[in-house]
Length: 337
Image 1 (cartoon, rainbow, N blue to C red):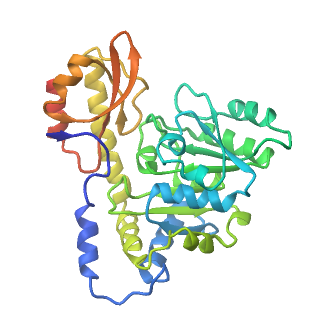
Image 2 (image 1 turned 120 degrees about the vertical axis):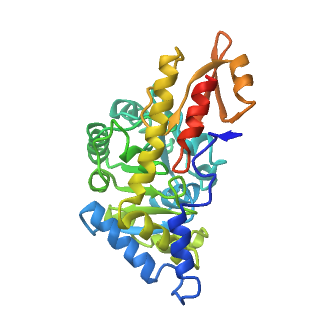
Image 3 (image 1 turned 135 degrees about the horizontal axis):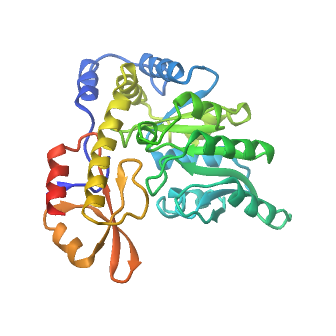
């Protein structure tokens, strides 16, 4: 069975495991006060070209979203997201469990734009509505599309003008940064957001995301709120080691680029064979449209996710390539198409 279900099904890149083995019995300070977390932060600061952001290592993406939004908002404040937003349908109501309503904006490509946000902001000014305060986007989006610098800057400028927080879920930020349509760097994300995270779990790490907080007002007491929500690992050095390996010589980008290139190869073959996609292929998530019969046939040898009913007897599915996907697996899928 060839596996295209997700990009986090393999334990980790071998170099990460080798580095952990090198430090198996080294005594380390706990809770993030160790040399590995310190060095990982230095490497990330170098990538961003600045060191004024607070960096926190958090075990997973849902936890990063939950802790960040819980810390950044007061009880009566709400979140704006695209209708496809990961926090809306894929995190078991984690944000709502902390009392924060999520308002959804329509988007044809998974991206939020200032005009869609403004429509919600202007219609929720009364004191008896939840007050909109945080704009949530993910890059890549839930449907694999990638924001350009112009689009991110427009969102950031709008948020600043309306005293809103721009928060970016970067679970697949590696894929976004190495996308063929990308024109942003980590320095740009630090410049044009109030907080964002750099995803490791879906790009070669065993566990872990690096949350970067740029806006000073959001930094206060953040570690206390992390602790309160169980988001600080006693063995935080395990995460620090992973980000050391990923960023000391560009491995993070190499792994994401590998996944993207194989996804582009698959997308090209799909187009050549006459299949439609629900979105232009821009990252490591590909969403082709098939008949039920074709899906049944492919499932005999390939694992992938159902996505949505598209009408007229057609259905979209999701293929995801990863740092560990073999080109031979993609070639096998192409032959089966």
